[in-house]
Length: 340
Image (cartoon, rainbow, N blue to C red; front, top):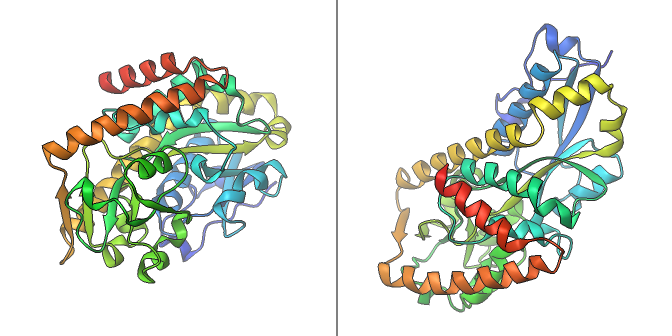
């Protein structure tokens, strides 16, 4: 019988799994690797939700424990492929050259919440994007996005023209494409290093969703937000699992996880949490003295839409080269999100 281990105070009181008889009856304890700060919503809310769903689906026979600091963000997929951890969360933009089809969900211009985007993402993946086979070597458990990404900087940015020439931390994927189109000088820094990068003035700003205001303490080092409705892009994430670990589970437990947790159910729940932590980040901004949200003007929105249209056309063509019906995938995502 596997021993159930509760998370320590690193999660600031957020329990990783439900305590009680179900936890102590677990036959399988999965190891989760996470790279986010201890109290970030990924660790304090998303992984606990995953464990809750897993325990409920398997009548407590499967649980999990979280380990932090096992590897930096770009190394997480290899960590799971090698079996050093059973599960992790990856940001596709950190995997340079590894993912292309995942950029479809990151495109600017989609309407709707992170929940809507995450559900649409899974459905488009199931129907179209999985044909690219970019996650080979691991089992995809869920796909999800953060909320619309905005520009955070210490000096106020009040127009698109102000972005040109700035040194901005921008992740890979579509975020990098948009930053280049806006004339920013991109700096590649994983999210956990954002605070010190801005505090040391190594960058003028960062492009992230509102959750970073709280999760990465941007209210202290980037007191201004330049907000574009719908965001400059949306980040693409996946929960992934070691294939051998899943294969070693009894068939009935595999079936329970596939039916009740993996895929759309978990993607939806994680999307909901992204929306919640984005709201927390916005509240932290409006309630912190010296912080401001500067809305893009109608003129700048028209300029950005022209830029976004070029990025969309380029990415759709790029993804189509992977053997995916990229236009159909884009149309499906846009329709699903608008109707959610």
